[in-house]
Amino acid sequence: MTTGRIRPYPRALVCATVAVVAIGVGAAHAQVVVTDPATTIKNIVIAGLKSQIVETLTDQARKIRRMARRLSVFTDLTKYAVPEPTRWRSYRYQDVNLYANPYAEALNFGDPEGVAFADVTRARSTIESELAELAELSPAAAAAIAAQLATLDLADSTLIAGTDQNGRLRPQGKREMRAIDALERDVVDPSQAQSATAVLDKMSAAVLIETRQKQSRLQFLSALVEQLLDDNKRARDTEAAVMNMQLRRLLNVPGEGGGGFLSGAGSELRSWRQP
Image 1 (tube, one colour):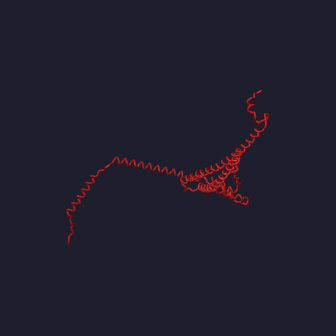
Image 2: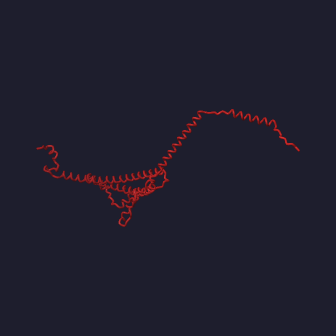
């Protein structure tokens, strides 16, 4: 029967184990905590700035959420919509204005050359040669006729420009009408998904449409001013002709002195004394 014995470990292995344990214990006792004050202060400042940034962004998000709350939360926006607004219309061709159809088309789409206007107006006779001969015989008569012809030319130019301008603005008014309808639908939309940026875009669109309408209104006003100027010139020429005839009549009426009605009036006024 064999007796069991514990085989002793080799001496070299035991010595190596003891040496490793001793070195580890020595190293553990030899560790020292190293602190850098500058790095510590820097980390504290960075942490404070990060905290302030987080608080600022949180406040901004809170304000944006409040700004994003639409008026539709408190009231129905459809009450601000205009029911059945006045629509832009075109001149319709009817049997009663068959002769005016070209001019009606010019009022709808414009006519920069004035072709449609020339088709529905009476043409002015060309008398350049006769007017030149009249100028040699009677310069005053030629000047009066030239002024009247200039008034007619001015009226033609004003009417052609006004017709073309009206024809160009009429289709533009229809496009603006459709844009306003679309903007109205977006404004009264009660959806809460629209952000503050969408509201700002609607405001920008409204300002753009307003600017376009102001431009169109100024163009219409310019056409009206031109028409008024034409009418004023015509009235002024008429008054000037009447005044000239009146002055000639007064100058040619025989008076007591054998001259005109005003003959000797200057000397009488100078010699007049209050009784």
